[in-house]
Amino acid sequence: MEAPIYSPSHSYASPEAIRKGLQAWQAALAQFDKAAHILEASGHPLKRGLIEFLRRPKRELIVNFPVQMDDGSIRMFTGYRVHHNAVRGPTKGGIRYHPDVTLEEVRALAMWMTWKCALVNIPYGGAKGGVAVDPAQLSPRELERLTRRYATEISLLMHPGGDVPAPDVGTNPQIMAWIMDTYSMHTGFTQPAVVTGKPLEIGGTMGRVEATGRGVMMVVAEALKVNRIPIEQATIAIQGFGNVGSHAALTAHQMGAKVVAVSDIHGGIYHPKGLDIPRLMEHVRRNRTVVGFPEGEPISNAELLTLKVDVLIPAALENQITAENAPSIQARILAEGANGPTTPEADEILIEKGVFIVPDILCNAGGVIASYFEWVQDLQSFFWTEEEINSRMERILKRAFYEVLAKEEELRPYGLKRGDYRTAAQALAIGRVAQATLIRGIYP
Ligand code: NAD
Image 1 (spheres, helix red, strand yellow):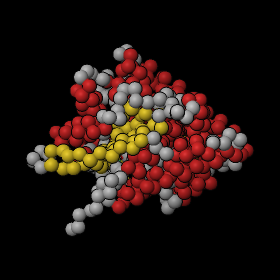
Image 2 (cartoon, helix red, strand yellow):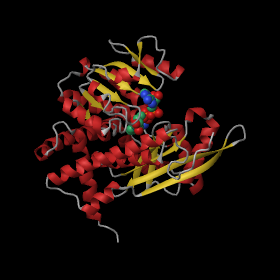
Image 3 (tube, rainbow, N blue to C red):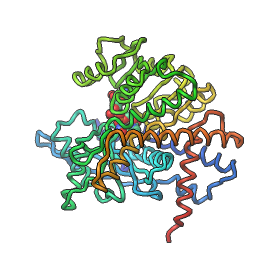
Image 4 (cartoon, rainbow, N blue to C red):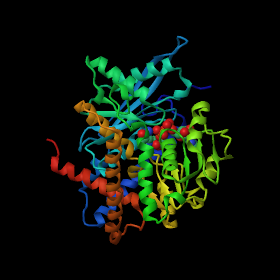
């Protein structure tokens, strides 16, 4: 077989990964342009140069680095760290380990982080990072060596006051601990505030592991209220049963809703009367997949997305709801646990159908809010209770939710489609970053 040609931005990514990454980046730009357009129509235009500034990432780092494998061989890996915008504060964003990570995907995710932090009004800019790797194929020692080397390679961009990574797909608290330790070894003293999502023992926060999924359900609870659906009668389907999906499922279960279907990369399960989520989580702990759970019937990922449910929560990856399957979506509320799960074409179709979309930058912001709390606690070396974390997070999410609803009403006379909460949320966020940029001024 011919060796793939090295291209700096993609390394040896497959054509499919490159296509998916580009699609995510184009979706992020299309959403931005739509929001910028509506801001202009409503009499709050962004200056021409400002649009260009906000559309572009501030800096992008590509690193190629070797890792020694357990059998003594050496393998090369490619990683990225992108800072999209740092006007409102240090950049914040997760680190993804997935074989399809590309520069374009990381860039899209970094841009969404900028809008997410501005939308919930926490003092951060947006960033993202990742390594093109399947972590399941590595031994724990290989994973540690890869993480420590990647952290070293990107350490010129990381700083407690400058850029603070966090977990995302394929990474977890142990990986964050290795990043914190590596950075601390280089600087000579312990620096917990350089990364969030750490284990509790080394400066992690109560509630961080659950925060994104729990936050998704806090926002869904409000969306159900607005749509006059009692939560005890609500049916929910969740695609992806990782950190976000499983904790959204558990919180939904605790709130009294019926989670009728969940899935992961291997397949899904369905029970019309509602799945027993704590037992399912136990099954996943033992088998590492939802497949084979005895109290339900198998269902495919494609079938799950089109189930007739009150709430559909995509909590896996980008580009899952597309022009092809959007016409068959039957959910009344689409709550985006994942980042970028809906393509712009699908968005149009769903808005026309009257689906109530809770956009990603609002729906999954619980994770970055809890990360922000972790960072604040680390900087002050003063720790809060889980109740404090959850109640403060809920207050922030609820405020952002109703601000988005109000923005949608405000922008409707200027051509915003009824129910286009994504564009309303982006307009709110972009307006805040634009305003901060103008107040700071353009250096020099
Ligand atoms: P994870 O790695 O813990 O879980 C991902 C899950 O998705 C796994 O269950 C996996 O099997 C499943 N999956 C992957 N491909 C799939 C497919 N094609 N069909 C069905 N299931 C599939 O990742 P996570 O941290 O839960 O992140 C999920 C999404 O939420 C991502 O879009 C991520 O960017 C976003 N997000 C995560 C956080 C966080 O705090 N972890 C915060 C905000 C947003």
